[in-house]
Length: 149
Image 1 (cartoon, rainbow, N blue to C red):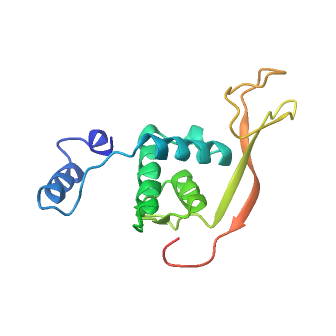
Image 2: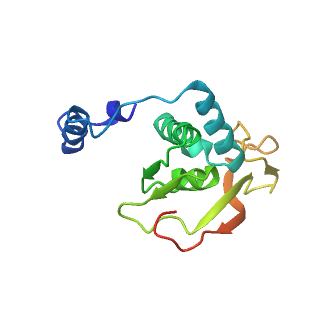
Image 3: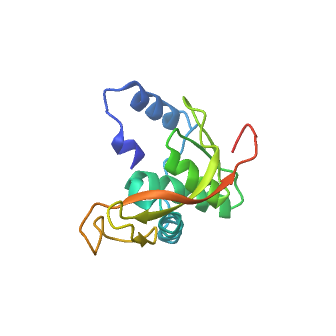
């Protein structure tokens, strides 16, 4: 899915195709078990609605590779991917940002009536007053200063 996201006339697409052709990169999709687990972990953390299908596939593949004994490294500036990767024990490194400083556990709440919802609540609107829900961190864990998170 990552390959499909790239513009065929772009430099990243050309770099990917070249890396595949010379054997530096292998294209692989995660198995259904890893996808299910990645979705479950991201729902529990409250990041699922902020992840695309491609993001979930990347996390699932990293989880699958970790289970096979590899040490996957996700290179991303996306904070939701970094948060979930850290919760899965997957290393990540940002490109253009400093990356996350805290592992966050999210909750949903209604800013109008203040009703709280679990992070995996399916609806985007408050069941009481119909206001659009917002999210806020309920727990954060300071990440140790290290080069690779």
